[in-house]
Image (cartoon, rainbow, N blue to C red; front, side):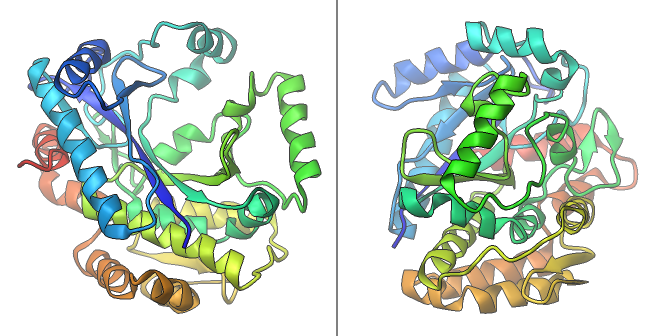
Amino acid sequence: MQRVGIEEELFVVDAEGRLVPESDAVVRAHRRLDPGEEMDHELFLQQVEIQTDAHDDPGTLRDDLLMQRSSAAAAARAAGFGLAAVPVDVLGGSEPQPTPGSRYARMIARYGEIARNGMTCGMHVHVEVPDRDAVRVIDSLRPWTPLLTALSANAPFFHGRDTSHASWRGHLWDTWPTAGPVEAFGDHETYRAMVDGWIASGAAIDEHMVYLDARPAENFPTVEVRVADVCTEVEDALLVAEVTRALVTTVLSERHEPGTWRLETLKAARWRARHDGLGGALLDPATGTFVAAEQALESLLKTLGGALDEAGTTAVVTDGVHRLLTEGNGAVRQRSVAGEQLDLVAVMADLVQRTDPQH
């Protein structure tokens, strides 16, 4: 059973829910309150990052994520601020301020407005994969990752407006030259040549800037899946993590091959997932057709049946998928709170409250 870990990026906010460049204060408070735990800076001073250890037991992963969230929220309160698990700046008005450091400064200097568009918060899922299989796994995941995006979609509002999308984060992120769908690599040598070519061209300053939807980790035998919005609800985050684990397990154990997918189809699938969330059509990779979201997710559950049974997560994943289909994902919740008057201050208050497991 593959171990899995979660990284979450969170925004630092003031009492009115506006983003503030105060990550240093939150990180310092975190070190005082939990000296044994790590909280990281991100590209911008409006952000912090938390991460779990790698776990093979779903219950232990849940406990770890809850502890990380609680610890981070307590540190923010101690510093006089709050944290919001939301992918983009809902209210607007917070000018991105890069975190001091040579690498971040280089990124801003080279990429300018593209880098400033990168003030977004995602959730990255790391799944243990033997190095020899990493490229085959990322090749095979390409048509399935839009389903993870749809489950996690949590960014309907941006800078005071309704974007008419369930998730606007991915569209901002796709402005990076190394983001977006790619052809299957086939082997590690081809993948390595592409990475070296991006760095040589200046499209990336280092390997860490290879912003594929799924990529092999640089220093660990894992694959990092990067398509999910940060989820406000911990249970939504855990659902995405377990579906990701099951997808990787299925590729490894059942020797799934990448198949032949046109980039146009993959781009369309990503856009539908970001636009519709769970309220429209999604690509069913089992048939290669766009179908109702419910049908696509039922196909997903069927495909993952063996891996879910092996992990003992069949019931929790099935129930979680059906819950989101019935109640809606994070984007649906935000629009419900906003109401017809588009009360985005109320949206931010709700997000901050639900980010903290203690509430």
